[in-house]
Length: 442
Ligand code: FES
Ligand SMILES: [Fe+2]
Image 1 (cartoon, rainbow, N blue to C red):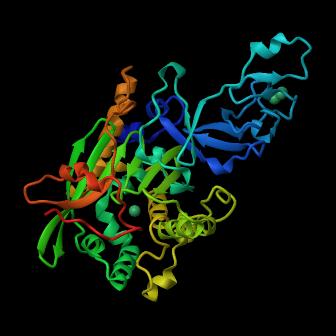
Image 2 (cartoon, rainbow, N blue to C red):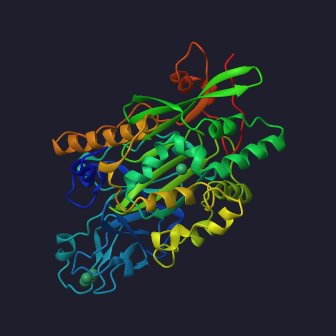
Image 3 (tube, rainbow, N blue to C red):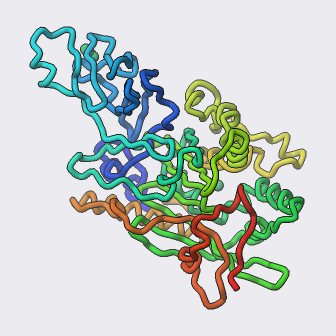
C-alpha cells in the first residue's frame, strides 16, 4: 500500500515531476532501429510527456531533436529528411543530427546559423533499438553493459508496442511471478503439452502451473534488485527446489528468468507506456520463421499487435483494449472452454490487465500478500531513486559493474538461490521458448 502522495511521486512523469527528472538520467529505448530509414520519414516519439522527432540522415546516423522547430515552433515531424539533415517545411531551416543549423534560407547574414541551434540528444543504437539520453549533458552515464548488446544483430528480435497504463503498473506485472500460472495458464498448458509430445521434460511449466504461491526471496543490487520465486518441483527422483530469478534494473528494465527476454516499459506520459521487448538467442541467428514463432509465442507478432491496435503502425488509429470494448476479450471462446483469459497468450493478457487497472492504479486501496513482495520492492527502489534526485544526489544504477540476469535453475540442498546466478553453464543458456530442460545440480 502507498499513500496518495507516494503513489503520485512514483508514477507521475510529466516535466518537472521528480520521476521525470529521475528517469531522464538513464539511457532509454526510444524506437526500433528498423523504423528509421536513411533519408526516410522522420518519426515522432513522446517520452516522459515531451515530444521529439527522430530521423536517420543520409550517412545512416540517427538524430533526436525536440519536435518544435527552434525558429517559430512548427513540427519537425512534417520536415523533409534529405541530404544530411532534416529541413523544416515552414521556412526551410535545416538541422543535422546534432541540431546544428546547416541551412537558413530566410537569412542573408550567415551568423544567425551559429547563433541558434535545435535542442538535440545523445543517441546510441543497440540490440536493434535506438536508445537516447535526455538528461543533463555533463551527467551522461556510460551506456549499460547488458550482455544482449554484445550479440550480433540477427540474434536479437526487438518489438515495440503501446499500453494504455502508467509504466509502474506495467512493470509491476513483470516482477509478479505468482500471476504467471493463472493469467498465462493457457500458454503454460500449451507448453507442457508440446514438451510432453516432444518427449522433453515439461517440469518447468508444470511447476509454474501447480505452485501459484511461490516463496519470494530478494536481494538489492547496484542496478536495482534480483528476486527469486522459489518453488518445489516434483521429479522422478523426488523433490527439488527451483528458483526463477528476475532482475529489475532501474529505471524500468526487466530480465525474465528464461535468460532470453528483456522488457523495458518506457513512460510515454502518465497513462501510456511504450513497451520494448527483446528476445535473443545466445548461439544462433533467427531466421524469419523462428523470429515469427518467438513473437507469436509472446503474443507480440505484428498481426496480433495490429489486431489489438497497439503496434507502432496502428496505435491511436483503431480500437484498442479499453473498458468500453471489454479489453477485446473473447467471452464466447471462454464460454466454450477454449481459453482461460479470453485473450491471446502472454503480452495481450498483460496489456489488458494493465489497462484495466486505470491510467494510474490507486495503490492506497490495495490488499497485498507475501507474493507481492517483489512489487513492493520495485516501488521502494524507484521511490528511493526519485528521493535521491530530489535531494540533489545521483540516482543509483547509472554505472554498474554487476550484470543484471534473469535465470532459472535448481537449487541444491546446501545452496542459496544466488548459486544459480553464478553457475557458469547457466549464463548463456536460454529456457522457455527454446528449451524446457532444467539442469539439476548433482
Ligand atoms: S518554424 Fe521552422 S523554419 Fe520557421
Ligand atoms: Fe504477465
